[in-house]
Image 1: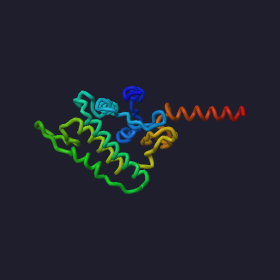
Image 2: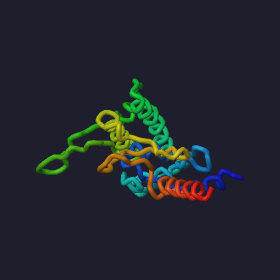
Image 3: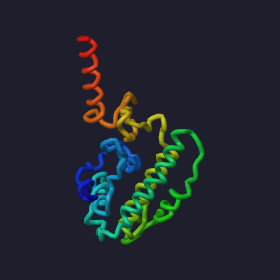
Image 4: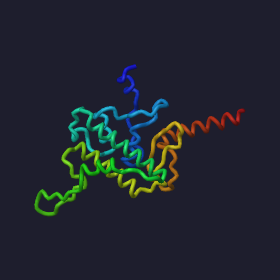
Length: 197
């Protein structure tokens, strides 16, 4: 089987975490029992950014040099380490995330008479701007998020994470349509076997 054949079977990244930093973590997910990277190139990365609402492929001028996917993968790796440390209530080194945050800093922009605007992520390179937006969202989550609500899907076959924004804060599954439904079907089958057996 070639790499192309393997990539054809990979699903598109799921956007269900209710937070862009966690959605980035979820671009690595369990597929057929193995944790697989769903961002295979710059085009995949641009489509994912569009999917989460942070820029379209047309804005990013994709040239397929691997820079965008490389930046997102590096950011994902550092976010994964920091989220893991935060969930386990231990210290971690934020320098890699801070490097992404330094790429784009807030600037006051005054291009016409009247009121200036505060450009929170001032970076002329659109790809770096988008990556910086996710880095900033990750920093906000790490510093200000309620980590009682940052969870991993309860399915043992799933690696996806989410931020539980439900009213009752009792979300258990990455998605009721995916893992939640599989759990319900498994429980139903078990009850039927117990009743018959």
